[in-house]
Structure formats: C-alpha cells, structure tokens
Amino acid sequence: SSERMRITSGGNVGIGTTSPQTSLTVGSVTAGTGEATYKGTIQIQNAGGSSPTQAGGLEFKSASGASGYGWSVAAPDLLSGNTPLIFSSRADNATWTEYMRITNTGSLGIGTTAPSSVLEVQGNIEILAGSDIRPTSDSTSAINIANAAGTDFVTFDATNSSVGIGTTAPGASYNLDISSSGRTWQRLVTTNG
Image 1 (cartoon, rainbow, N blue to C red):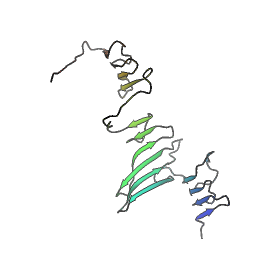
Image 2 (cartoon, one colour):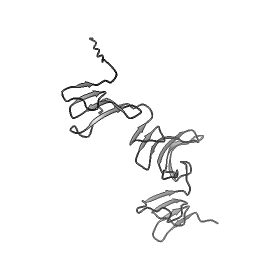
Image 3 (cartoon, rainbow, N blue to C red):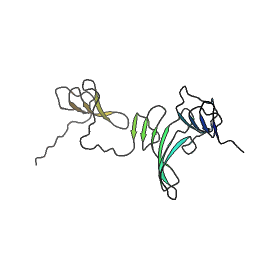
Image 4 (cartoon, rainbow, N blue to C red):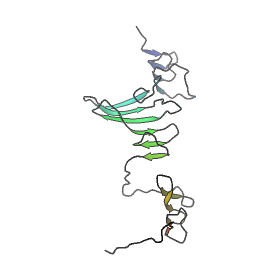
C-alpha cells in the first residue's frame, strides 16, 4: 500500500507528501524545493502546476449540482517568474471562469488576465451615491484621465481646485482651463430650465 498521510514528530501533518514543512502541507512538491523563509501555517502545493487547474489551490464549493457551484483560488507557476494568484468561479459547469488576478508584481486585474497597471479593469465601473474619487493630498495631487496611449487630456488639480482640458497644469486663477492645439475655438453651451 502507498502512504497517504504523515504526522511528523514535530506535529506537522502532510497529505500527499512525506515531508510536511508546515502545520498542514497538502500536495506533492519535494521538501526543500523553493522553500520560503516563512512558509505559512498551511501550504498547498503541486509540482509542475502550470495552469489554474493544475496548481495548488482551494475550491469553495457552495452547492451541489451537475457540475457544482463555487469559487477557486489558485497560484499556478506560469514560468518566467509569472506566478499570479487567480480567482475563478463556476456555476453548474465543470469549467472555471477567471474573474480576477493578482500578478506577482502586485498588479490587480479584474476582467483581464494581463494587467499592466496597479489596477486594470475590463468592464464598467459604477460609483454609488455618496462615494468619492479623491487624491491622497490636496497640496500635491492631481487626478488625470488619459487616452490609450497614456496622454493626459483631462486633469483635476486638487492644489488649485481647477480642471484642465488639454493641459496637465491648469492655471490657479481658473476653475476651468482649456488649452487647444490645432483648434481655433472651443464651444461652451448652457441651457436654461
């Protein structure tokens, strides 16, 4: 017969491993392979897990059904230093659908598998009543809206309480500062009623 579980003299429990490195170790990675200074209390591992369905992970199964419902958290090794934490869900389906990912460089992607910024969202963002988007400091911060190329075209300057369109440095004496290049006029329309 094959060994399935081991309790060491130090009290560590291993399932699927003969050398558990934490209080509970589940998986098949050989001890000493890529060990961290602090390994945590529970370690979930899988040798050669190169996809979310192969990596060490957790499933939170919320209901029974033909294929079940629930959430999955997995950390596959996608090679070349790419080890994201992936959050997926399934609803009466055997296939997982990824919804959120944190890369090993600290970027958070929602609706995207390749976030290139600190936060990248694919889809609509709804801000509920009473919520704010604000800079961390009125004296030094601005909020910019940019195009896909990264060029800022609207700036909310918290220092001067002003808005710049076509300029990233709206004047302190203006609430609205519009700067144009290649255009001879701007139009401002007001409607009563």
